[in-house]
Length: 202
Image (tube, helix red, strand yellow):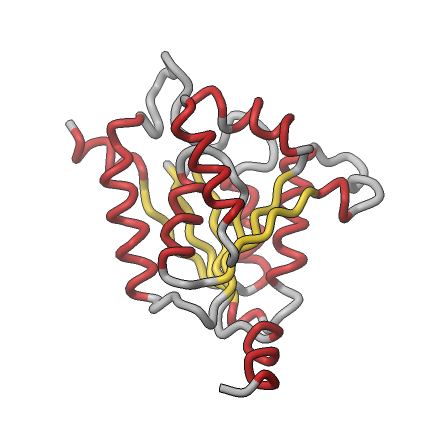
């Protein structure tokens, strides 16, 4: 492949894969949503979808970097050679404190390993946007920031994978928000229902 063709591949991904889903449960969360022991089942389900979609080096993956679904998705996409953009709403240190470190040192290490992969790029919303959209919290703004990137390409290329219990989240800007925004824009959505996975674990 010539350098010209390589550049074209980088500019025009074959597919854009968005991910939105639950973090690992904080200790004592009631009711449970993504307990740590459910991780192998989540890995299997995400891998099945990526296999079905034939995700690889010609594709662009977008996600946050939280412990649980985000980082599992990121790891599996990188394993397949896809390009990855990790988009977070706060500075790296603040984000780690809020969304990664509570789940244990192993998740912090996984965050850094993903970040340091040559196919990955970490982007911080405040570095890219001068101000947050009015009346939106940072998590909702981060969803819209990811969507703006994804839908800068043909909407036919956009696929959203949700790891979700199909219930409202703990606050604004969660998976329900991302699901609604993508479906309204004509993107394709697939849901891994964590309620079913929980039942299968019992």
